[in-house]
Amino acid sequence: MTDHTLIDFAIVNQSGPLGTANAQESLDMAVAMSNFGKQVSLFFIDDGVYQLVDSIVPDKIGRKAFNKLFAALEFYDIEQLYVCRDSLFQRHLSASQLSVDVKLLPHDQFASTLAKHKSVLVF
Image (cartoon, rainbow, N blue to C red; front, side, top):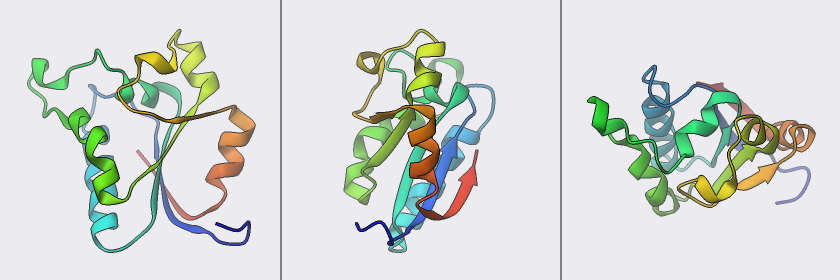
């Protein structure tokens, strides 16, 4: 990708995985967009980083286990997952606790990477 090429969609996840349906809805949206040939990147900031934590199991509290879909995102050509490093560290988490490989970015680089997208959806 050149610096002048914009990616179609960025989906920013800033909500925790259990309090709302935002996590499930953002993943559903990402997969739907990908199925229509759109390029999609996923971003995780603030409490949204908890969506990727391996030990959080939504189905144990009666919610759909959406987090299992993270491992299958590459089959939908969704390979760009970005995590705000500062948000992760503020929550005393490390990349080794996450369920998938991500690109950790400092806050300023997170924002500049997000700016390379045509449209941004926030959940």
